[in-house]
Length: 271
Image (cartoon, rainbow, N blue to C red; front, side, top):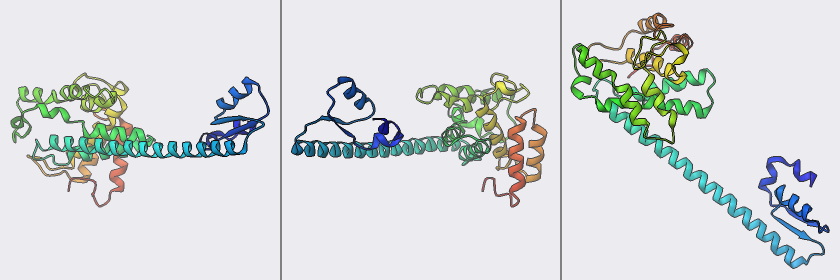
């Protein structure tokens, strides 16, 4: 039995049948606890032994097939969920004729920063989804305000600001992903505490929101708007440097600046 114990993870994938002359119930119990599928006491009848071995092999094959099918269904469901989220993000972006693809780019930039600081695949994918849905609350803002070409009035600006809490409320309805609201609610907080909706400061702002804030501002500066073209790359870099420590977490702003310096052809922008 000691040999089975040292087989580690492989033991659960190999059908094991114990052959023993022992009639001790504790021995049988220990055998099953170590992963045995069957327990046969000597003397045994060869024909029955063969049948039980065949039964164990059929059972393990069925288990493996079921595991494969379940994993495939999980993968398909995850892909479907991502497609639905991407479609929702595209619908939000479509409200503003000048933000086509904005949410997708913010999601990609956010994941890029997250991977740079060591997020594993699962955490990086989560922040990608948060980035896709960071502006979902704009569904509840009128098109007239979102697409206004001139300056917003103070009243209109206050309405625009509500997209953060509206987005959080929408995403609260997805209990399977309780952290999903983080990006939507706090991506307009500022590192110096002068942002909205809660005036959070420094590391009181959730890390994912601090990352998305940099990605969101970067994409806003490198995309066309109703009142201007995409900013020149050197100006974008300067704005990130200027906002480091005030608007942005310095660590994440620096990562984005390094990405800018590596992007010598200025390809990392709306096209």
